[in-house]
Image 1 (cartoon, one colour):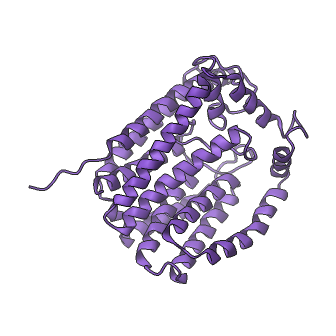
Image 2: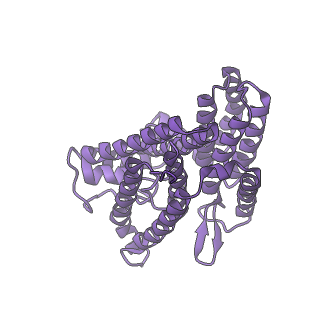
Image 3: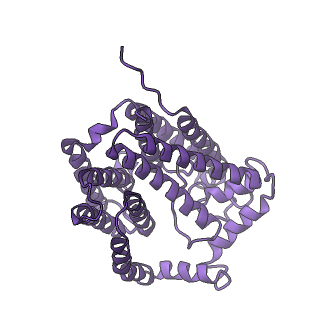
Length: 360
C-alpha cells in the first residue's frame, strides 16, 4: 500500500494564522476609509474575504498537485507566456493613480505582476535543475533575459517596488545555487545606472528618496507618510491601543489597509503584536527553507526556496517601509494587506510549497 504523504502542519497553520490576522487587520484599518467613500464599513473586508476563499481553494488544489508537473516545459512555458501576455495587456488597461497595473474582467481586477512572481520562481528553479554547472552562462543568461523582460514590463506600468522585489527573489535563488560572485557584481554594476535613472527621472520617487535621507526636509509633503507611520508604530507602546482603536488610520496615513497595515497593527497591538507578526514570517521562512532542504530533487529544493524567499522579502520590504528603514513604496504585506491578487498568489504559492513539504 502506498504511503500517504503528509504536508507540513506547522507551515499550514502559520499561513492560516496570517490570513486570519489579515482579515481582522483589513477590517480594522479600512472601516473609516470605506465610510469616507460612502460604502459600508465592511466593504473591504467582504472583498478581501472573497479573495481569501479563492486563494484557500487554490492553495488546497495545489497542495494535491505534484509540484514536479511545473518543471515540464509543456506546463512551465505556457505559464511564462501567459504571464508576459498579461503584463503587456495591463499596459493598455485603465489608468488608476497614474499607473496601469490592473486588468478588469467585469468587477474582477487582476494584477499580472503578482502572477509573474510565481512564473519567475518556477523558471529559475527549472534552469538551476537543468544546469549542474552553476558557473555556466546557460544558467544565468536565460534567467537574466526573462527577468529583464518581466522587470522592464513592470517598470513601464510603472511599479518600481515589484520590479525590485522580482530581482531580489531571483538573486536570492541564484545565490543559494552557488552562482559565482562575478555575475552578481557585473549585474549590480549594470543595474545601478538603470536604478538611478528610475529613481531620479521620476519627481515623486526622487522626492521620496530625498525624504528618506532627510525626513525633516519636507515633513508635510514627501516625508509625511514616513513620519505618520513612525507615529503609529511608536504610539502603540508595549500592548497597543487595542483592536479598532488606531488613530493614525483616521486619514493621517494614506491607504492604511494596504501600504501601511503593519503600522496600524503595531499601533493597535503594540510591540508584542508587531513582534508576533515578525515571528510568524520567521516561522514561515524556516519551514520553507526546511521543505527545500528535504526536497527529493533540485527543482523542488529551489522552487521551495524561491517561493518562501519572495514572500519573506516582500514582508521585509513592507515592514522596513513602515519603520522608515527604506524609502516609501507601496508594497503589500503578504497575506495581511488588502489586495486580492497579492493574497491569492501568496496562497497559491503556499499550496505549491506545502506540496513540496509532502515529499520531504
